[in-house]
Image (cartoon, rainbow, N blue to C red):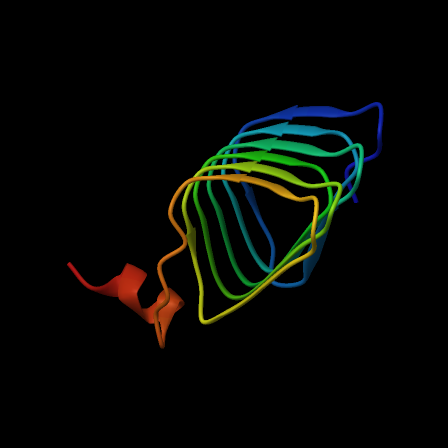
Length: 107
């Protein structure tokens, strides 16, 4: 967990879950990522599942993406399943892919 007062500059990688309540200036790769209401990510997120309640500036690539009404996403969301609550702010394309994570491995 990245606490609400924390600012991380650099990339994060985890086999488990990363929860961002503070700020991450870098890319995140994990099994599951949650960006809390006060959280900010300025970089790419790649995960099996992403739950966004705060700010994401950068592309998101995940099998399952949930965007809450409090979220602001500025960047493309590549997904297999996408849910968007009314009131969420999205700026960017949202292309559907059957296997979005496998597409990253192709040259």
